[in-house]
Length: 574
Ligand SMILES: Nc1ncnc2c1ncn2[C@@H]1O[C@H](COP(=O)(O)OP(=O)(O)O)[C@@H](O)[C@H]1O
Ligand SMILES: [Mg+2]
Image (cartoon, rainbow, N blue to C red; front, top):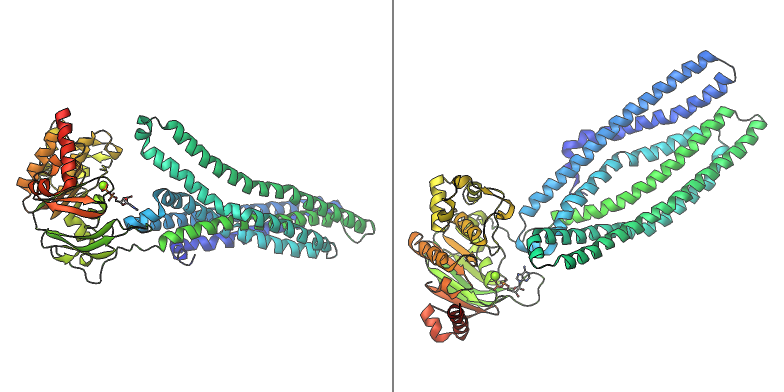
């Protein structure tokens, strides 16, 4: 909470005014029953119409007074609560932007979504309640108790029985419901997890006809959420009749003892009426306090989920005075080993190799042989566990992170475009790129060939995820986007798998001719994509099996030969 409170600063005026106004509303609320008793005891008893009208008018004024402060207090409370929630959401979002891949692995995307939406909302609501209910209830209870005591001090004794009874009932219920409320958020996480995974991949789900399976998976988690929510709520539902029982028993007791006092003349009818109202106010206040505690539990669960995010530091940090210039695209791996956080075995074992600036390096190997893992270490998507990686002769950990990621362009295995236009997507690579520069990059990536056929050219629309383009077109656009960063190193992780062989060959050629100083690393499934690379690394189970040119590997690498032969057969078979 200490970490979150400063975010309230902008709304501090609201946060102060809301409870102050709340107290004023309570004052109005407790005066009204007193005025009512005056009407009965003085006005009606003396048949004094003027007095009744006068007190009646004062009652209306008191009600208006209470209403005005009540509404204002709600308004300020809501502003402070939702404003606070928005600030927290902004802060968490900002934090997540700086997360490393390892951080994202740890939290999972769906849990981050729940934290950004649900948990922030809960904190906002609980803040609002803290400013209103948590102030209103105790003040209500104290003021009403004082007034009740003033009206009739002997009758106050009935509370000696009913208050502890109610307190016991509330404590038992809360202690039962508490763990369930704590669990609720984790269930929301799980439901969001399926929703998110399913919706982002809905096309795949449909093409594999996995709807039934997905529905069953969703149902299981949805039922889990429902059952927990229901169980938690049923405790609260159970509390209501107990509460009513205690309130009505207390009222009956008061009427009984009060009635007796009226018959012997030590209490007036009006006093009894107001006393009953105070009883309801006091017990209601106690109920409100218990509800508030319930929500406070939910809120505290959310607060710890939010602070967990805010307290997570990306382990990818910059050194004190980072190197701000990247000389060239030469790369060397020196005794590099890597273990994924939380995973038992190493994904890379003692990797050693180096390439000169401008070289083209191919990487091939079966799936799971750690090809992607190897290249992800270069722009520091993850940091090495042991050893070091140098780009341009400098350890990657010594560079300014932004510079490193600008100069090492990475086209991920899963290519994503953002909704907008082709131009807006290209500007992700370089904010200032002119149309000429964009077209040149598109040409190098063999994308201009189809973009030039659109009437609106660079203004052609891109739907969410680039769904209105074929896989091959998307891949070429993402390559062009990476080229616009004018990188010194470009890494294509399986980025041409969906491009036909002829276009693929054209892209390779364009790279070789037009980007002679850019170091290019190409991870590919097809030998044809990397055949002409200066050197090729064959990966096998996290180790380099062989390294060399195509011709050398044909002579010395059994794995390379196996892949080569299987693909030759494929070609002949076609
Ligand atoms: N984010 C991750 N967390 C834990 N393990 C991972 C992660 N990504 C990949 N791995 C594991 O590392 C190994 C290598 O994966 P990867 O580099 O993606 O292989 P390739 O790209 O060669 O198909 C696999 O065993 C995979 O399960
Ligand atoms: Mg891969």
